[in-house]
Length: 121
Image (cartoon, rainbow, N blue to C red; front, side, top):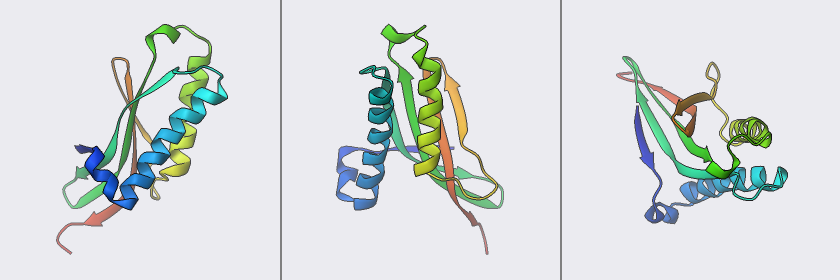
């Protein structure tokens, strides 16, 4: 799996700018909805390429973590549910795919495959 994190220079592309705004909105709405400023911190966001034997799959990923001062807070579980639900609404996976969750230490990465192309056709 290849990840490309969006950079400031990518903001000139209207598509990237729209998606980057959407990722920020997911985090902002989660924090506001739970009335806990900085509960969830956005770590990374970008597009992803997965090269399989006969297909290339593309989509988007969002990496976030819970602020250390909120570890153990009862709102944390609710925050994970809200983020995953909002991510899947905005970055809807194609038929036959689900949102993938990858947990590495404190960071949680959500991946949505939004397109698949056959190689060699």
